[in-house]
Structure formats: structure tokens, C-alpha cells
Image (tube, rainbow, N blue to C red; front, side, top):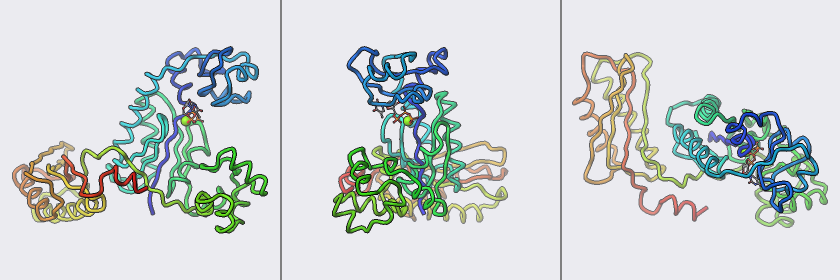
Length: 355
Ligand code: TTP
Ligand code: MG
């Protein structure tokens, strides 16, 4: 089962404006054109939302609903800067990051750079890192596919964290108003309402054939997602800079034979991940962490890219022999490749086109 995280910043533009000018905190804040302009609301603080103000509403209407609101013009330089910071945080945990907008991304953490099997732990760390880096809060959904992760991030906004598992998915999906289904826009929602489909439970009653006859290809998508099925991959458009596997031992190791055995296992894991992603690399890296947590990384460059188990193991073993201070115990061993090539025929671009 995959482990997918969806992150969505809370009242993104508005939260940044409040961070820059804390006197706006607690006020109805609207980011967009001025009240008498023909512009629309980009976003607003949660205080303003209580008055019915929302994104894409004409500013003049927002002003009528909430005359006490403070209006500020958007400052995209700041928003992009915050967006770059949150992406840096995501990249600490996985190379599989799919940004959807400045404030939103999917992450596949099934395998991750900190080797943490519990995706809730990763979600909490991401929230904490984002807060430290940007002083902003976000809401996070954790689940086994993209659709449910996205629903999860909306369940407890702001500053929320929700997990949707195969066990609680039916209950959440069935009670969800149809307009909250990602992919069902206003027009489709209105059409569904007319057909008597108001919630996920109503949608679940419909057969695949009937949904396809009413909604075309999307009908099949709706049929599947209400059953918790969504096979869409998280697609990162950025090439990963490196790929690696590491292992912290239960007990520190001081015996070469044992270390080599662990190295073999690490290389096996690494190569199988590389094969799945059709990645090759030129630079082989070894990471040694001693029992006092001192970290040593060493690397060697090859003439050409490889994903060959024997070559990688031979080079990693050589790096270990040359660089290990045998008087000291080792706590963690890691092996990886950088200067990566995406394998023949499977560039990210190609993947994107296939989708
Ligand atoms: P959203 O994530 O949709 O909204 P939000 O982050 O402001 O609030 P929430 O807590 O509900 O997630 O959009 C992110 C940013 O994108 C938002 O701050 C402003 C911008 N945006 C627009 O400019 N116009 C729009 O119509 C929408 C929906 C968003
Ligand atoms: Mg948001």
C-alpha cells in the first residue's frame, strides 16, 4: 500500500500578509484588489470567511458582505519565496513531490529519505519544519492514495492533520457532500444534485456504466474514488539529485564481515529502487556514522552511469575499507548514487506524457 501525503497551506496569501504585519492578526483580511475595483478576492483570513467571503468573489461583493475588512494587494514575491521554502522541506523527505500550486503538493513517502515507515511521523515533521522555515501553518492529509490524502488535508483546517485508512475511508467518503469531492466542480455538482446525488453514499449507489453514460471518462473516476480507489501516481517533474538507502543498526558494529553483509543488503535495496525508477548514476556515495554520531561521507565517480549491483557493491566496499577507522564502532551505514541519469525511454517528461 502506498503512503501519500497532501499538504495545503492555510489561508496562504493572507497568512503571509499577517506574518509580515502582525497587527492584521484576528482581523477580517482580504487579499485582492481594492474594494471598489473590478478585481476578485485571491483569498481571505478565516475571520472574513465567516461573513461568506471566499476566493474568486468580486472584491465589491466581499466589501458589501464584510465592510470592516482590511484589503491588501497581493505580493507575489513573498508568496513565491514561501513556496520555495516549503518545497525545500518536502525535498528533505522524498524526491517524489508533485507541486499542484504555490501552496499545495502531493508527496509519495512510501519510501522516503529518512527511512521512516510511519507516515504520520513524517507528516508531523513536515508541519514542524514548515512552521520553523516560514512561520506559517499548513494542513496535511495522510492516506494510501492522492484523492483521499487531499480529502484528509481539508478535514481539519487550519493546522490540521488527518489520516484516512482503508478502515475509516468508507465512513468519510459516504458522508462527504458531493461538492467536496475533488474533481467535481460546480457544474458537475449541480448536475449530480439534479440526479439525486448529494453525498458520497448517494454516488456509491450508481453503477459504473450509468456514471460513464452521464459523465464520460470522469464517471469512471467518480465510481472508483468513492470506493477508495485512485491509482494516480505522484509525479515529480524535477529530476532527483541523488538516490540512497541507509540503515541504523540495532547495535553498533565493529566487525568488517558484518558491515559488508549490511552493505550488500543496502545495495540490493538501492538497486531495486533504481530499477523501479529506471535511474542510473555516475557517483557512488558511502555514508558512515560512528557511535558518537560523527558523520563521514565519501564518494567515487565512475566513467559512465550504472545501476549494476556488482559494480556499486564493489565501489561501496572499497570506500568502506579505505575510509573506516577500524578502532571505532559504526552506528549507521548508507549507500547512494548521485549525478543521476534517467534511464532510456523513461524521462520524467515521458512519464508525464503517458499520464
Ligand atoms: P487555497 O489553498 O485554495 O486557499 P488558501 O490557502 O488561501 O486557504 P485554505 O486554508 O482554505 O487552503 O489557495 C492557495 C492560494 O492561492 C490562496 O492563498 C490564494 C491563491 N488563490 C487565488 O489567487 N485565487 C483562487 O481562486 C484560489 C482558490 C486561490
Ligand atoms: Mg491553502
